[in-house]
Image 1 (cartoon, one colour):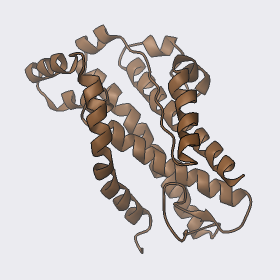
Image 2 (cartoon, rainbow, N blue to C red; image 1 turned 60 degrees about the vertical axis):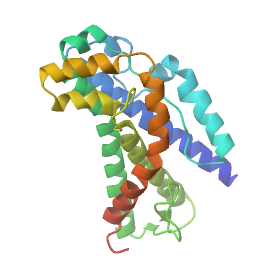
Image 3 (cartoon, rainbow, N blue to C red; image 1 turned 120 degrees about the vertical axis):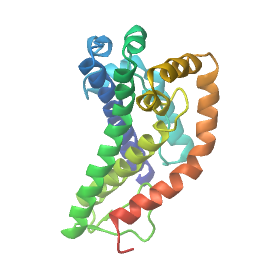
Amino acid sequence: MELIVTGICWYVTFVFCTVLHEAAHAWAAKMGGDLTAYYGGQVSIDPVPHIRREPIGMVVLPILSLIMSRGSWPFGYASAPYDSDWADRYPKRAAWMALSGPAANLLTAVVAGVLIRIGITFHVFVLPPVINFTTIAVGASEGVWTVLAMFLSMLFSLGLILAVFNMIPLPPLDGSGVLPLFLNNELMMKYRQIMSQPGFALMGLVVAWNVFGPIFRPVFHIAISLLYPWL
């Protein structure tokens, strides 16, 4: 029963964080003049249009990964459509669109961290014996506070995971789309041409998956030290 509750909480957290990520992309594209995702219903935290667009990445893969990992954080994916011609015409706007998704996930982690600190201050949450992705904090008593502490712990962890992973500057991750913000027009056009070559996306995912652990571990430790500076 504990594994089932943990798995359900992880899946709800995954859906929320992923939908927020893609809705931020869609909203930024709309603000930049591309209404493609808006017309597809992605400028919304309603999970239905996002699940309808990517049922494998939003339902099948995360549930399978939860079953296989016995309650560890889930793996999946989602996407928001955009007009590639618009991105070519306005590369800076496209770069801000790419940045918006990880920024939304980082904001989620910050809000979850603030709520955890408030819970610690008012003694409804306590420090766990061991800190991990599922237990950044635990409830001071059984019942609703235990579930809420676990949910906020997962929001903190997964928000941070998605923000860091997606900011790795390799295609097809958002980090590769953010780099044009720091390039002049000539370098930016050359960069976009190189990144659009077939095969780069698959290679980028393989490399990113292998380097993520060494990158994320110190980031997670820093985040925990900011959350609990007295530890």
